[in-house]
Image (cartoon, rainbow, N blue to C red):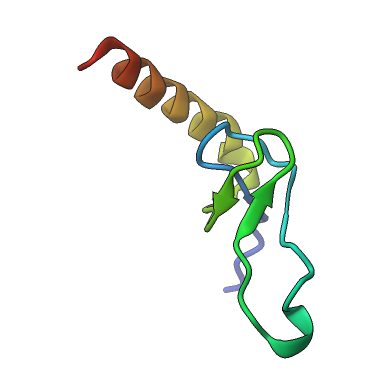
Length: 71
């Protein structure tokens, strides 16, 4: 059985899907961190099923609200 689910990289800081992998280093096979065009976050971004991106964003907001309230 083939997995036909589509995955998309999501910024773990702001929830944006507008991300890219910088081209520097690709010619020598160096791994570069992902880059978010929205908040300029860099790092390794999770790949989320396309249909679950909104759910992922809601979880990010919950965590952000907890950290703001000191819980």
